[in-house]
Amino acid sequence: MTQNFDAIVLGAGVMGSATAYYLAKAGVRVLLLEQFELNHQKGSSYGYSRVIRYTHDHPIYINMARAAYQLWFALEDETGEKLYVKTGGLDISFPQQPTFQKRLKCASEAGLNYEYLTDSEVRKRFPQFHPDEGMHALYHPDTGYLRASRCVLAFTRRAQTLGTTLIDQTPVTSINKSENGVTVFTATQSYTADRLVLTPGSWTKELLAQLGLNLPLCVMPMQLGFFQATPSES
Image (cartoon, rainbow, N blue to C red; front, side, top):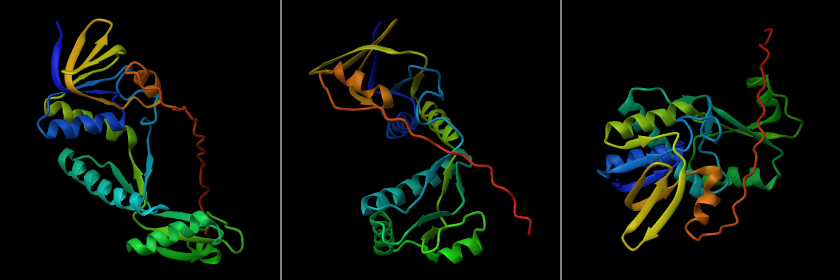
């Protein structure tokens, strides 16, 4: 038997789980489908931390960050969980670099609370860093990180509390669209809805192809480095 919803969200990473939560909060009957287990390690939402900051090289991102910070604070209040950890952040560069100049310009125009530091000031305040002579830095005290996996789980728990149906370990086999909405098929069931939201990350291209959309999307790996800090002897 086909089950009916107002909206179907495909992909339960941070984008999909957040979408399901805010739709459910608005009174929408939501189905959230995930092809792997919830909080799986194959996408970009899993893990201990993801950076959040105001300092960007375009004003639209600063405005988005301002809105995002408030939404994260609201989710913390609603769930009673600590999702955001304030650490402060440094952007270190030679001052003539275009990206650094854009960040400085945007930070100034947006009225951000930041400090402009010389290389010697960075070494004095943050002895773990040794910028080359002539380098400068922007220090922003509100930079921090979000506890990535906790954020996903907080969204999904709240979405379910608000009535969202969450089904994981259930890949979508096909999607049919019509004037009346969309039908999503899995190996054992079909679901209909007025609206479909795709948030499957690396699997977006193949799902869009089922809808006749061939976008030039490309999966790109991101190399991350983690370093163990050595405590100062002083």
